[in-house]
Length: 351
Length: 148
Image 1 (cartoon, each protein chain N blue to C red):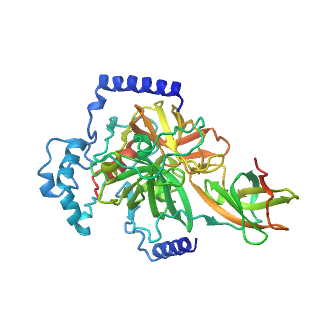
Image 2: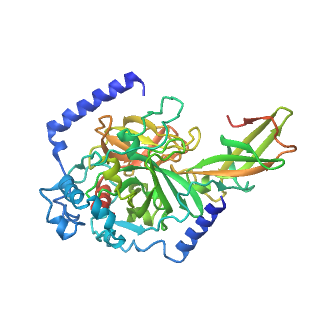
Image 3: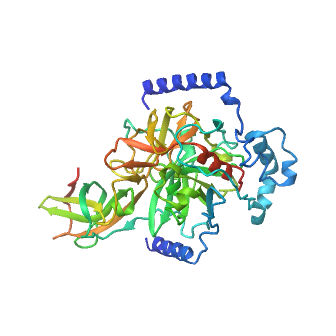
């Protein structure tokens, strides 16, 4: 990133942080706690861990789990004990929504509990306008990753972003990156901080894939094309404990200034490296939003961060689809109640 | 590559036998759907897909290749990436123009005649390799992209 751009970005982040503080948004934990259709904070914890939770919200939950998962317990844990309790959620069906249809909510980002150690060399990419060139280990670089999966006998690539949840085990992506509709993708692998073939934080395999029922049943319903993958642990670590996770926000007005990242692989890109775009979002109609964003195939699932401070932000969109006739515009579902439902479904799952 | 193909076959088998999906969504009682996956036996599915030109493909457009390498004998292995819906980015034709000092390769992608491609294109991508045969081994000749 060029110096002047970084300055602009930092100034923007500071302004947003101040604005957030002013309206009290930054203090919010799990904004869904009062919604009757969603899970509450301590679900997914065994009784002995739940008893140790002090306070509410992501951090309290997370601290209790972190205290429970001592290195000794991790070493001796049997596989059966790692199977999470997955609840069957019932909620309001999401019609196409393009304006807040409920209280705006958000969960803040989390720094990792570990100080992640990357292996391998530094990035070797040609400096270009769209390459942020974050060093390995930068919070954006390590919370975004390239996704490899198989669908109908073909290997595909997508992008995904680690999202902060109580369960500390989930990445956020496009629905079509987990399901082509009516069938689930397989061999689903997340490679955080992927750079020119290297996997500095290893390969993380999906334990579960999630999407909206609307997308699963109808792969033309792009307003509901959101997905999430719950990842197996890697070397005993849950993905968000190890790398940190971005926040997420729903039911905010269209027009947020967002920073989009992803791994476009189709021409003129080659999938080697993280690519960035930033700008305001606009109403795309039919429950979608769009931004000026030249990324191509392979970028699907890379999050659009609002209130981005240069390291962390709130996922409020993602690279999702384009029309062949409009290569300059990238579309996303509008993040409304369907995002809240999906987030609530995965937030307490811990592998 | 052989191991990748075996992995894909296994995945297909698992899907067909129902082991790949344990949740049955769409019953109207839930607004989310999920499945549980086994860890891939062949590791991450990073292998290239294989493509053969399909003469039925229409609306051809030139697409830049990712890489071209010499194969065995007169063969040339061409790698390219297709974005969007699979039926809207099928390999139609690979043109090869040979001269004494250069080989120009042009990849043409298009859509299957029945595919509707005017609407939303998901930003997924799949990378392929396809093999073309030259009149003579590539040798030291330069490879040029007819799409750039």
